[in-house]
Amino acid sequence: MGGRILLTLRIFVALFENIPMIEARSMLPSAVLLIAFPVFNAFWPDTPEFAFVMAFILCQIARFALRWRDQFAREQRRDGPMAGRKRIVGALLIPGAVLVAAQHPLLCQHVPSLISAGFVFLFAVDALDGSHSTTRAYWPGKTFAPYAKELTQAMLVLHLTYILLNETMIKAVSLEGWMVYYAFLPIVHHVILTAVFRAVFWLTPEPGERQR
Image (cartoon, rainbow, N blue to C red; front, side):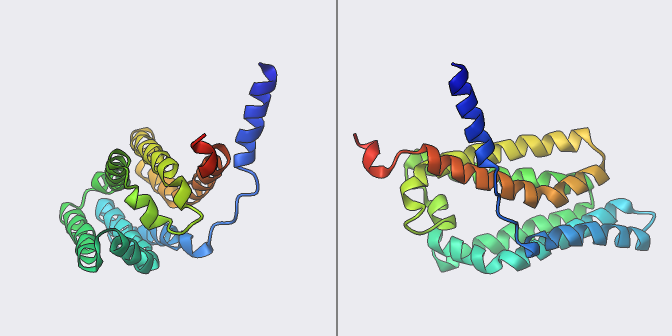
């Protein structure tokens, strides 16, 4: 019994060993958020809520600018070129307009939860119908194809965890504290995602062994 527990602990630790470095450009939106907020706050000292909303929107614009080509390609693989473009434009313009009009920081703080909820819906639908199309769109190729089912289930659990984590942080820390958490979330996501992939690859039997 003790040997099994020790082995489990060793495997768990190994999941987080030698994590590859995150790309520096992935942290650019976080830098935009952390720099833009105090700058905007200096311009609008009487309306820190508006300063935060504008900094948050600028952060999202920077994030989309880094990923738009990959995102278009993924949406095209899922639903075709036109449907993918319409979905992305709607997903950007409508929430952006609502945030600017409302000027309420709490709405911005719930945006990551809403995004994760969207992924939960997609992965749940894929798990139920067996298509795993979202996983195949994000990670195409022969390397990931045999693990599409397990990755879909793992991503479903991961995004549910992100919703719980974000909502907890909203209630537990100040607005500035949440901003720091959100700025470093890409690093946390990179580490956890690497560990999740390792767990799926290590613990899932090879395709030929699953049929035995």
